[in-house]
Image 1 (cartoon, protein in one colour):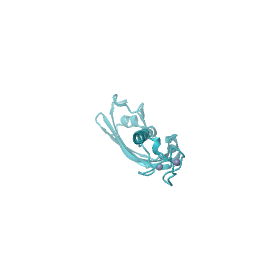
Image 2 (cartoon, rainbow, N blue to C red):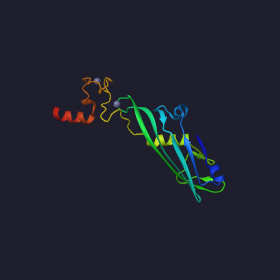
Image 3 (cartoon, rainbow, N blue to C red):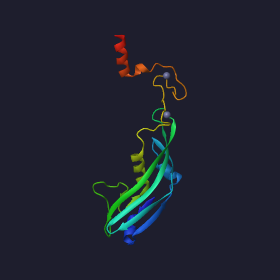
Image 4 (cartoon, rainbow, N blue to C red):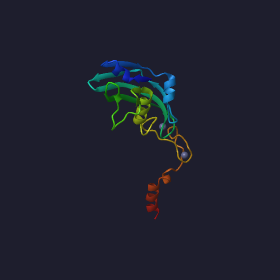
Amino acid sequence: MRLELLDIVKQRRDAAEFPVTFTSEDCAALSSSDYEVTSVSDFVVAVVITGRKMHITGSTSVELIADCSRCLKKTDVSIPVNLDFLFEISDEEVIDDEEDPCAALSDGVLDINELLAEEILMGFPTKVLCRPDCKGICPDCGADLNISECGCDRFVADPRMQKFLDVFKG
Ligand SMILES: [Zn+2]
Ligand SMILES: [Zn+2]
């Protein structure tokens, strides 16, 4: 969805609201090789103009499926999104912040899909876990350690532990 911000300026309106709905195609377009976006909650983008400032706000939540960082199981991830942008305006222009430019703004048009794509990248967890205590998979045999302990001797795989064992041996 694209918001014609410049039109609001030209129409001399001081406020506007845009209901945003993401279709399944929009969600698919937001997906990447690392995650599949399943839904984006309907939300409203509010635009308020005060003098030469245009304030844009809106909040929603993106639901997606990604692989658990430890065991690779498909895991539901919810990313809260809070949009909050302040642009300068002139009679003919919506002016981006030079120091912190918004990639989704171009020629007075704000691309909401692109905006959400950025928000997902920023809000994406550094570690996706299917559960807080996920035990992961055995690096030796590939067994899912959440299901059963495979019996592999994995302690020697850790070099710090190897040193510790060497001390005892020596
Ligand atoms: Zn896991
Ligand atoms: Zn194993």
